[in-house]
Image (cartoon, rainbow, N blue to C red):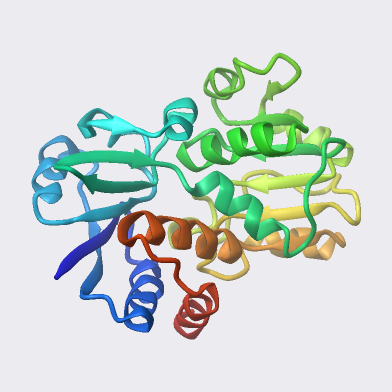
Amino acid sequence: MKNFAVIGNPISHSLSPEMHNAAILDLGIDANYTRKQLSIEQFDKEFPLFLKKIDGCNVTVPFKERVIPFLDELDDFAKKCGAVNTIVQRNSKWIGYNTDGLGYLLGLTEKRALHKNDRVLLIGAGGASKGIYLALKEKVGCQVTVANRTIQKAAEMIRDFENDRAISLDMAEEELGSFTVVIQTTSIGLPKTIDETPISLHHLKPGTICSDIIYNPAKTLFLKEAEKRQGIIQNGLPMFIHQGALAFSLWTGQKPSTDVMKKAVLASI
């Protein structure tokens, strides 16, 4: 039996096991998928021990960058964006991938496909943001502004693209009306910060696409506020399903049913 898992901290909110085990059952694969919370403080000791027990895993907050030194190889996209959300064992080597970016774009097409003339505000500069940012640049080519609590971290993320900007969260609030798409990638809105939002949406223009990559809860305060201001909202479920399907294919060589995966997640929320 193959053993797969998702690691993070916190991790109890993750519905990756429900989603992947449904796909495993549907395809009749001899495998199991679990969730594992690793210590932030003891990660360097715990993660190598964890790797010995599995055949592949997903990585979520806050470990998408911290896993990299422990891997043997990175695929080109993961190397360029500097973040890993999927780890695969091949020929006794651990290889890191990032399916977040493409998964996000595939999910957003349920609202509409992005185009080069879109003006995107990306809130946050963590591991998930890096994958989404690079996909936006490589697949769409639109202008992206990254707003983060630490501007320097945002500036490092956009360093290879001279037409993009790194700004403060306060500046993002003031300029909000100039963007056609706002993507919330921070962990604000998860259970510990369920009554918080990363920025005020007072200046949001009606019709703006407002996307939050959190899927549990299904509607964060960020999305509730955007909806009040007539934004077009989408939670993180479509991204979650599509990035998961891409990861599943990397582990098993089989393409899972996204419908089966989506039904399993919705039944658990």
